Length: 465
Image (cartoon, rainbow, N blue to C red; front, side, top):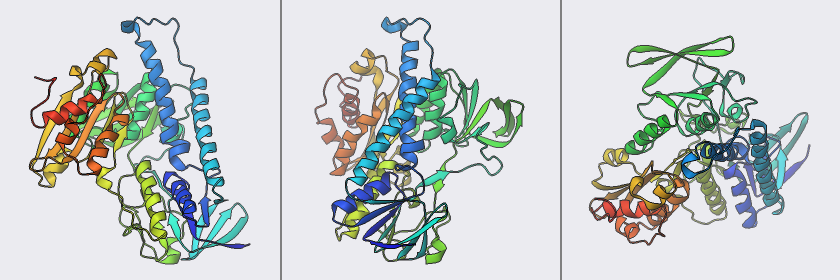
């Protein structure tokens, strides 16, 4: 058992953790990462953001080819090779794993593989199998991320009742899939399997899908996804289930009526919760709130020298938010004064079309008592959208009625994830709808829809009657 002393010890190597470690090293700190898994990268890289995007892209190509007649593209005997799809997904993940490992190792960051548990506010015990070692830290950053939540009466078995991890690596294409929860993860994985021929049905407790999205966007999304063959039961509460042979029978309640649904597989996608198990927080008198989050003030916990970032603290559970947290903590430890603006963190659902947003929705603006004005623009009037047969969608801008400052923006469109950043950039300096409207966008592009929506805020849209 040996003891080593580090300026900064980061527990967890997801997007928040490894980025924090790199920035700490850049700032001259002797830095260590403690990771319980064999690979760096956390949930996002290994069983989340990256593998799901690889499958989404591959299945989108298949879907496009399958419906290519209108473009003069006819394929004979077109079929998916699931083994190759999964192989490519793993190649993408492995490439990025190596990239993260290289970034970390080249900066002389020490990596400890094992479970980190606090023995004291300055001492961390790392256990890996029968191996135990202790390291001392002047500063610790808890970046342990989150894990899926489940229904009290329905736990995953990895065979019939799945988490997102199993849904990313199914050995065969299921004939039918029930997705409990129509949020980002459910919609993305449901889209993957629907494109491959699975009959996909969503059961959502809330009245709309894509929770947190603008009401107009979520309603349009549901209509679009229904046309793609997916089915939805919103305002529906799952009440029970049973496995009968090779099928799962789900019971649910919708507006006082009982429903029975059946599928070969069920994907549980009802949310995520902070992961702090095994950290030994009780050993250092660090408590969590009612939602399992670690309370912080400027990332500092109630224990001096111990910080927390990403999914274990308040704020959106998004990889890019965790990265910004990680950089900010490193700067804070170095004596600087960083700041992360959570109301400017964009969110994306990578379906086709994609759903992207930043800032306030109409509902949030109303709840905050804001006086606001709204501009929208349909993709039906966008030249690029028409040219590439992707007119299902719209752009929406919400601005302060008095100052014209952009309060929020939403888009459902192909490529929306790449476009939303332009609005975020305007919001970063307190830009107005007029500023966005006056920004020259290349023609023809989908991004022009945001320019037109910004013009529509003051009823000045050019390409809309």
